[in-house]
Amino acid sequence: MSTEARAPMLDRSAIERLIPHRDPFLLLDRIVSEDRAAQTLVAELDVRADAFWTPGHFPGMPIMPGVLQVEALAQAMAVYVARTEGFGSKLGVFAKIEECRFTRMVVPGETLRLEITMLKLGSRMGSAKGVARVGADAACSATITFVIPPDGALPRSGGPTTQSEGVAE
Image (tube, rainbow, N blue to C red; front, top):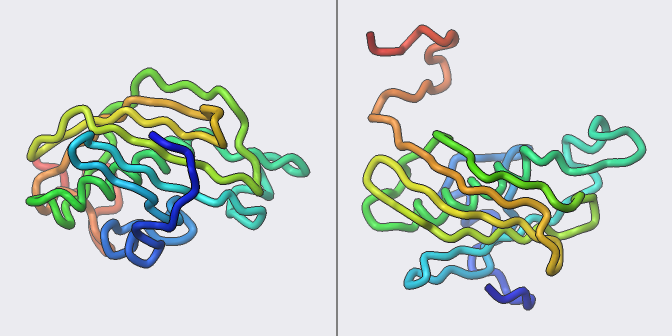
């Protein structure tokens, strides 16, 4: 995948029409490319000094939490899946994160480039290899597997509030 700058293919408002994530937890600013034949998508996040995590992770030395880098990769996957015929607004949830590595700190002022390559995509689950980069340097990599729960299984506003509520027995 190329690292040259290009005009966004999808901006933040277009991303919001595809996935349910919103501020402060929407971790994609733009989609810069998608290649259906290669099953790849590249997104970017401008890591801002006013991000919700900067005051506490860590005071005086903000470093983007690794778990948020993995979440950003998962959101890039979600955009790819949402743009796939037959999926639309179906929401996948984490099933497994494997081979996760953090190899570089990410700090405010940098742009995190999120590259995903789909490995498998079925009607109820899928997986992808993701690499988050700053420039040419890999900051995080992981293989992420998601499942799409049956309709009605995910709690909505006003829905189940405890772990046992809403679970079929």
